[in-house]
Image 1: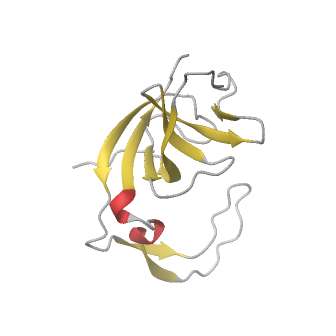
Image 2 (image 1 turned 90 degrees about the horizontal axis):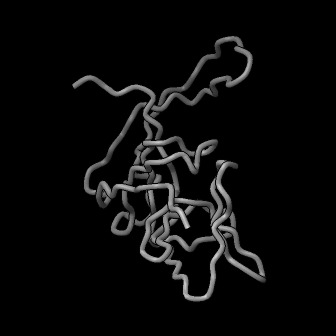
Image 3 (image 1 turned 90 degrees about the vertical axis):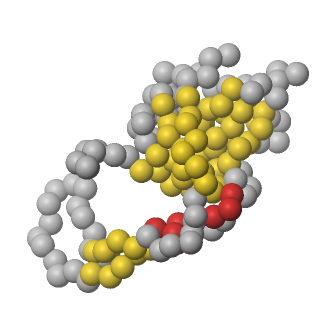
Length: 148
């Protein structure tokens, strides 16, 4: 079994300080441009994305198995207290190898599936050990690195 994602743990999230950004509450067209609209500017605290700060980690994904949904080198916000559900994207260990995949559950079986169709689903045999580390609740793609 090949594990295609190498995930780097960047640490526990802390809600000690607000992380507030200006939020422009106006949709941006992803298709054809639309006429400019008036917009309302407010603030958004990124901490509002985090329910369980003592169990939420920032991780970086390395690999293309989740491409179409999560790009290589994206930052993952992973909540270890969330209960994994069918079709959630999870960080898991399979026989002690760390990976990020989509969780599929039905009455007969549990398996992990990459969003990149080039990869086969990971099914489990007797003796295989699956542990769900956490549920990916959000991800950030860096399109351009900021200058320091």
